[in-house]
Image (cartoon, rainbow, N blue to C red; front, side, top):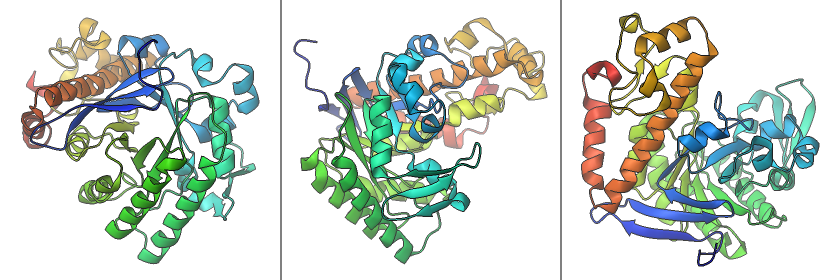
Length: 386
């Protein structure tokens, strides 16, 4: 498009006058991504129960794919033959792929870490596999994602200082190897700050990665949060990392999906988020609303004529009642999971749209206060108010 900034440009369009919140735009090969942004997770080339047309209708600016899972199924030969991840799932917007590090971390009983990478057993058939920085970036190159995450070790919580120190150094060595690998056309590389609960390790990791910007690092992520630690440690991990990330690059908090926690992170200067919470909770029968979550499967809604969330204009709420959605969920009908997923993703995307509008109008602190009152203090949760 004539006149558009080069791929990889991150524009800070406005900063809230009274907080660290910022309104931005990241330019990718498949278009601009407005920030702050929530990215729906499409682990296996699908945001569960939704297709590309659904995501377009919901105005999702960017989605995720998973390196580890797609490497196993359908495999890179199939992916390459079918034109890469965008063509494979018929999604024409930007895609971010994770490095596979978190999935390998979750297979702790089946893995062995060496300098070259990680050997592990497939969770599908037990086959012995190997992934390191070279392999991870090669897979992401075939996938053709707009943003590829550098391979890292996701540190479990809790971990002692000595282990964290060794792990951070390993992640940094792997990052340097990743940056030497060839990229897909227009592909951006994001580095991941690790360090567990230790502020000095997070500072060291962030500063070392910042120094790699000259070698082609396009963005920075806070990793190793939302891995089982209490909420104060999640927010502390973000606060210990962000000040040492370059201001003119996007900042991504990996795996963070609580609406209130995302609001707090935006106030610290973060820009991008992802989580399986809205889709997973939909499959468990829980709806997210502007006032927090609630169980649609509950018997209280058996005969309710209310929509899942009053005032919502998503495809679910526009046509169907709580009573109907509850029936579908309790009958294990796939349509119930699909309708509730449509609603939950819509809720998250609209929440971020309102947040961007608040930043643009220098009203982020008002937005934050309202979000706190609704999501943390309200005695009645979710659509019950309706």
